[in-house]
Structures are given as C-alpha cells and as structure tokens.
Length: 114
Image 1 (tube, one colour):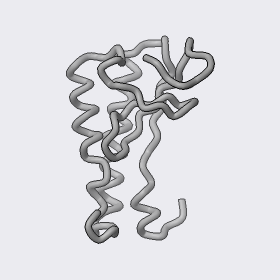
Image 2 (tube, one colour):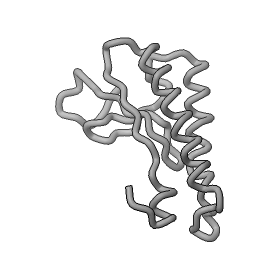
Image 3 (cartoon, rainbow, N blue to C red):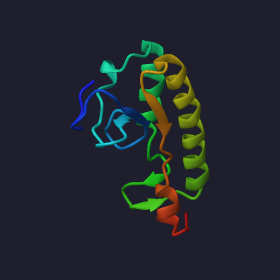
Image 4 (cartoon, one colour):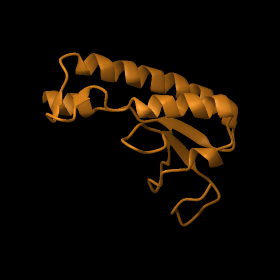
C-alpha cells in the first residue's frame, strides 16, 4: 500500500464512498488505495466494491437534485458502510487503524445543517 504521506510506515485507513473510486483511503493524505493491495479477503473486497458502487444513489445526477427518499437512502448507505468498516477492522488486525467516514451529501442537497 503506497500513499503520498512522507512517513509511509503507518496508515489510518478510511472507509469512504465516492463516485468512481475504491472505498479505501489514506486518512492522512487522502490517497485512494487500490483495494487489491489491501490485506483483506476477496469476499470483503467484493462487498466493499458493491457498496461503493451504490454511492450517490440518493442523487438524481441528471437534475442535480436529491431524490424524495434521498436522506433515507444515504442513511442506509452509511449504516452498511459502518458494518463493512467493522469487518475491515476485524480482518486487517492491529497493523492499521480503520475509521468510517459517512456521506453527508444528501443533507447538503436538502439544505440541512450537519
């Protein structure tokens, strides 16, 4: 696993969805990790990629607006992301810290405060 941090010996891995990106990131420098380089099972990699591909289903991209049930869809996405983060923590062990970064884009589209 390589990133852009000066000290590449230790990483905090962030689980975060984004458009057209693998869901694992360096929390320090923001580098998007290639999921194939992360020491987790292929089953978990597949689960993470399926989850990542669902990022933004709460947004109607053609209208640049939130679907009527957008906040609920985003909440479901975040809840699944939390569950997957726990699986990553179990599989990756203590070599790396792992944290979850929930999406808040639906709230921005809806004009709600965080």
